[in-house]
Each structure stands twice: as structure tokens, then as C-alpha cells.
Length: 198
Figure 1 (tube, rainbow, N blue to C red):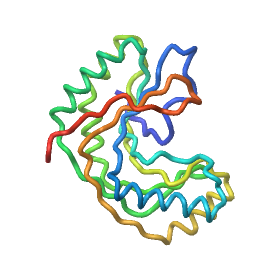
Figure 2: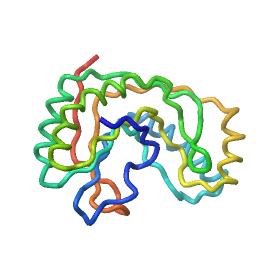
Figure 3: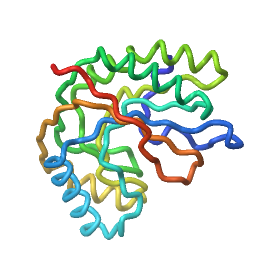
Figure 4: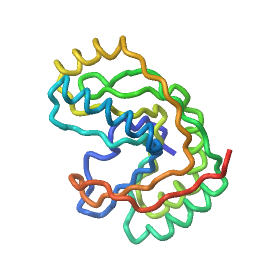
């Protein structure tokens, strides 16, 4: 399985509509969601982003491409895989960034995400036998506050945010599968997979 960090949506291309693009994500609960949404709004106002590059409030676990006719089988495999995985806590701790692009909340403990990536190995084998690219597992999970920043805005924001603090924890009790058919389409929810209680 490829283990390259997925800092951005996995694809800069979706060749000739052959594949749909899927993202497996962890989503914060309602209270933390509102708090992070407020952080995004503050950033937008301070740096006059006008919602450009607005980030969805989720942590990417993995991404892959697959033919749409594979979806029912993919869902069965994923239900089987995640029905034996335990819920886990995700701490969010302070801010960091990807140079000249984005500012995000750090996830200092990546081990649960690595374990999910390992659990996806059988699914990866199936995908590869269908002539689809390997799954990409996000080895450096984070929760974006702002994306698609120009270089000046990024530098100003990082000087500011490097001195700020943010500490929250949320429980991942389910994973959400998102899909889009074309590069510029929004993602839509395909399914939720409930994890075992910790």
C-alpha cells in the first residue's frame, strides 16, 4: 500500500471519468465542529479570505480511486473491515501549516490513523486487482482551518498562529466515506461506518 501523506485531495486528475474519487474521513462532533467553524470564520475575517479555499471540517484518513460499478463491493469490504475496529480519541493541539498553502490544527498522535491504514490492506488488494491505483493513507493527519492561501497571507498567518494555542479532543465513533465523480464537483456522502465502542 502506498503510504504517502495525503496533504491535499488525492487527485489532481480524474482520467476521462474512468474513476470516481473517494475520501474516508473522521468528522468532529457538533460542539467541536462549531468551535472549529468559528476558528475558520475568524481566519476568513482577519485575512479577508472571503471563504476562498474553505475547508471541510474533517480529518482525511485515506483516499482512493475506483470504478463506480465497484462501489457495492467496496462498501461490503469496508463494513467488514470497520466493524472490528475500535473507536478512538483524536487530540487537536495547536497550529501548523503547509508552506504557502494552508493552516491547520495539528493531530499529534497519528497511530490510530496508521492502524486504520493497515486495516485497509485487504481493500487495497481488491482495488489493485481491478486496475485501480493503490489507496493513499494519510500518515500526517490534520484538520485544515484555511487552504489555498497565497504566499504573503500564509507567512502572516503562520507568524500569528504559531503563538496561538488550541487544545481539544474528540472521539471518532464512525468514519464517513465521501465521493465525487469529477475534479471540480463537491464531495457527497456515500456511507457511514460505525466503529466498535472503545
